[in-house]
Length: 375
Image (cartoon, rainbow, N blue to C red):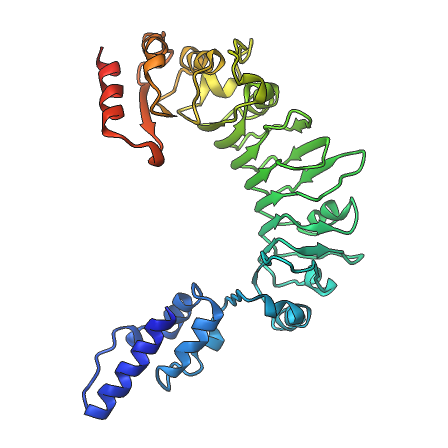
């Protein structure tokens, strides 16, 4: 992109010397659209466009997004944050994914910024909150791999975000107290939660307005409690059969779920052994009354996962589509595939489709799948 800016500037200089009239479609756009385009560039490149013409000289100053990729910027980060808070910043993303860089403490006034709508903090940031957190307009919050001053920091931060709608969490390095961690946000519509490397034993999610959830529940050391999610229509989860109790609880509390995306984790106990575990003795309301789409990835040749699919086919009365992402090792699975295709289905509209990962796409394997389905 930097080379492109230099070429455009050089081309204009040559055309100007030759007296040629340059037709520039980009400059015919309104300032607001140009600034929106520049917002997708690193700030260094955005500033470089100021050399293109007189009109472009100050355009970059109106770009609503600043993006720096150099670790040299970290030394002045605190004063920079103070400055943008004074200017009523609306969106802020700080990703300090630099090696050999100490953690950075953010100024407390950031957490009392009334204009902030989106806050994304990633890596090498130390969260030490002031007594009063007031992010009254914050709707999007992303916290990944941060360091926290104390065990109550996250709950204090969340309590100061009354209109939060979108939450993305990776709480690595977070130490919760004996009461665990409670996510309570009355207007929360979307949550993305990674439990990998969490140091939290008790975990609860309480938000009746939740519409979409991406939740990893593959660590059996956690005790999770889910409240009822009457508005949840899409659930994406990564787990193994070892955590089916948590998955079952999630489904029982999501009566209107329409889409379930299940990324299969392979527990250590499965290596070299077959598993005959059953999913559930009872049928969640969402499975029998609302579920329309089921997608499974990372599918492996274990009896427990074949019976999971059969369980869904037998009980999901409104299921329209089952997608199974599998590997190229299908020869040992022909009997299972035939049994599954011949399994009674509660929904006459249900279609079963297999697809291959992009890294294993082979024409011969695709032909084999088709042959199995035809036979």
